[in-house]
Length: 574
Image (cartoon, rainbow, N blue to C red; front, side, top):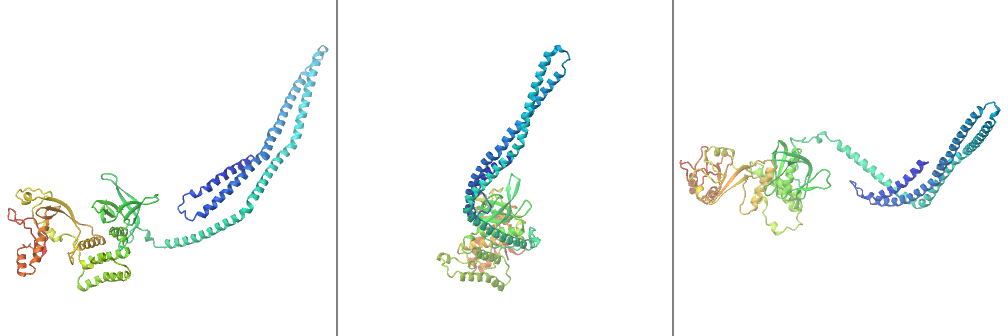
């Protein structure tokens, strides 16, 4: 009965806490928290119902304490304790009677002890009376206990039954009428949710079977390394990459993170984060594959001002090239156009044509057809659009550079570079200093500045009257490098003085080209093209190398030994 009463008290506390938790359910965080408004309102109503039930449980607990627990405690502490006390008193009286009887039994036969015999007899009589009285009280208490023990069990159970009946009656009066329709609607809602759950579970089961039935090679990283299917027209990309972090002067760590593009930004979202953060602004940046710590598929993003950005590693060749192409497309701000996918396709087709070798006029015409057809289809789709006058006046890429024009990715041919390195020319100090005080530039030059430059590429153009041709040529060269994974660039030192511009090999300090003299010679050739005799005389004045090539020299005098000066330009075929 104590446990029943304790359980009822626990029920009061539990219902009180349950009501509070039902109200706080809407503050719980779930991964998917949409569509819970109806459930939350229903739980609020249930919270009120539980509060009312808590009042009934509290009243039932008080009734059980008064009608069930109190009678059984009184029986245990009053009736059973009384019987036990009377038993102890009867035992003491019996002991006194035994002592008096022992004393009486030791009396002698002589008559002179009559007084002693009288006193001992009175003592025995008193002990017997006391024992008789205590025994009667004890026996009466035992007989009464036989009835009281039955009543002690019946009264608490009657109180328990009356309390439960009263609880159920008040509960039925309080909830039976108004709760029937509410519980019926809640049951219907739960049933509909169960039906939706079963349908979704079946759909997910079928989807899982379809996904798991694919070839095991899809789980292998870089499984199609020989001929991966690369999408070069992406304008957004997402996936896991390894980010290189410097932890010291020579130590680095790699962290696997989730990256995604958003507009013109590269975002990163670490595990456990609720949103991504900005890593790099991709507008006008450059990206190229790099070799880093003997790891495969690494690429580096460089900021527009030329500063080295972050280095990332993809898990496969396909992912590596798609990330590079996507970042290249985003850096051109294609995502801001009306149809970025079509623009990306057109730009990549133009870049492919620019690096495709053409052996005949017919092939050249064929290669120009796709871009022309694409242009015509775009014009047909955009008939209803209003084109601004300023935009319509810009020349098309085909008007600036012929489709299929070859691209040269190195500043000189390998044979010419070999001749330059073995010509035995004088080394030039990149800081403008010279050991020979007779060198003219060391004394007369008012300006000396050295820059580190890299040669991206060159290609023939149709016209040089607009600046757009420069941008278009740069775009096609960069796109061709990205498509064909040609990221090695020839590094040179550009020496700017008041007398000349020279490209110097950083390894051998040999001048590769004298830009001012090359430009001046080109102008002279153009001027004398109208007069064949003057052109022939100009070509005869240019010295030849052993393999029959013209060497373009600057206008500097010979050195002290009578050899031509070391400032040589680019060689052209005879």
